[in-house]
Image (cartoon, rainbow, N blue to C red; front, side, top):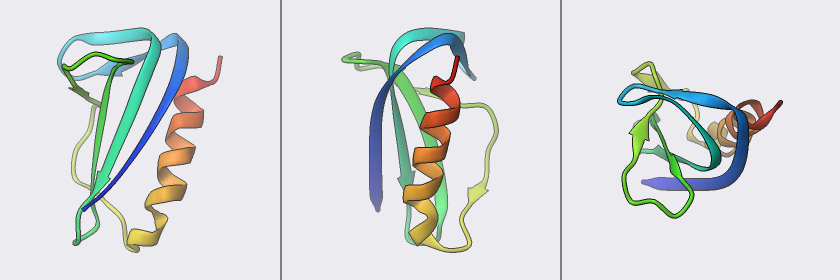
Length: 80
């Protein structure tokens, strides 16, 4: 299982399933298992409680795409 993490600032906020929109300094965690299933989680930087991003069943056809998808998602969530 591969994990990628990025800290960024979300000025306009990020929607979560559990608590709605969160903003400020956030950490994105993506995990890709051996079958290509992708998990997307987010938290306030330094916090222990993680939230999920809306949606489900994210499947990568090629696990090597995990890095690209992670960077793309972090960039989109950070943009003003």
